[in-house]
Length: 245
Image (cartoon, rainbow, N blue to C red):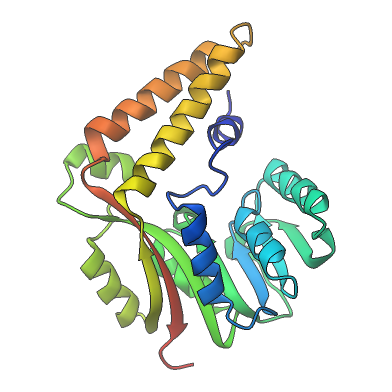
């Protein structure tokens, strides 16, 4: 089973591919797009879940998404058609780091995609290249809530703690104007949903050639979460503006 397919199945019941619940997504979008008619760009949009939320709740916004995955963009386009917002959504299949546009954007999103740019600060540099003066960036990334084990660092990456993360963001020329730290309930709900959905698919499709692999993957990921990083890893979503445009 390829990674894209396993991820798609795992997120069946949690389409936002980050540990954030629906109310938190709604509040973040409301704060990040206060006028309601913004031009929005998502760098590493995947299936376009954030953009679809924005387009359906803010009927005057226009949005564009960039991702390397043809399957994810096809899914985004089909979902937009079904929701009646396809005419306001542009999709681009290419590396988000290489994307260029004649437009500046009032809101640049990149949630859970910092790995594609090499970390949080390079992601902010990429977002800045597309940001209109006075615009907002909505970015989501991990942090260490407690001192991690070497195994957790090897598995997830070398994040900073939350205070250090904020200091790094400010030193790079950004001012936080809002934020959300995912609660324990959000973090746990995400993991239960992902690995439960993958397990359910495997049990419901016992004759599928990928069934045993999917069930084993779900078990492995669940064990890693519970034994390696559940007590130490957190997730923060930040709404930022440039300190000096």
